[in-house]
Image 1 (cartoon, rainbow, N blue to C red):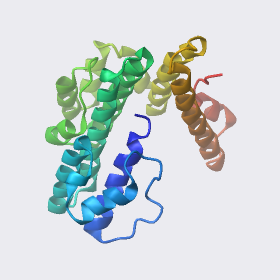
Image 2: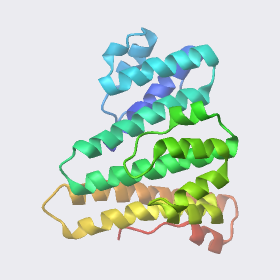
Image 3: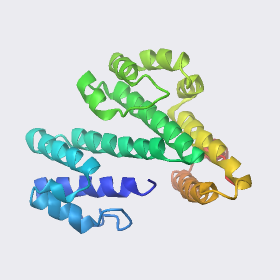
Length: 241
C-alpha cells in the first residue's frame, strides 16, 4: 500500500514521455509493485493488459485524455485518483485497524487538498469529479460541488463535517492546514508504540520515517529561502519519537 504511489508516478512518466516523445531522465522509481519496464512497455505497445486491473483502467483513460487534450493536469488527476482509490481499498480489506484508520484519514485529507487546489484554480466540476476519490468520512459529491463554487463553499462544507478543524486551519493558511494533516496522521500512528504484536509498529515506522524526511525538506527549504527560524519552526510537524 505504501509503495503504490511509486507505480502510479511511473505510469504518469511513461504516458507523458511516450506521447511527447521525450526522455524521462530520472523520472522512474525502482521500488514499486510493478517493474517500471513493464509499465513503459504497456504504454509503448498500448497493451494495458500488462498492468494490474486497478491500474489498467486508469492507464487507458489517462493516455486517451492526454492524447486528445494535451492536458497534463487532467492526466495526473485521473492517475492520482486511481492511486488514492487503490490505497483506500487496501485499507477497507485490511484486517488491521491501524491500516484501516490510516487509509481513511489519508483519503479524506488528500481529497480536501485536491478540492482546495481546484477551488483556487477555478477548475470545472467535471475536472474536480475526475480528481476526487471515494472516502467514507466525507461526502465527496458535495465536496466536488463546493470546490466548483469556491473556497468559501469548501469552508462551509468542512465546518459541518468530521474535518471542521481542517477548515479552521485552512482559513489561517494552506501551510497550517498541511501541518494539521500530517499531525493527524502522526497522532494516529503514535499509539502503535505499545501495540507490539501486530504489523502496526512496522507500518508506523515506515510512515514516521517518511514524515521525518519531509521535515528535513521543510528545514532545508526554509534555510535556502532565508526564512526566519521562527517561521520554519511553525511549519514543523509532530514527531513519532
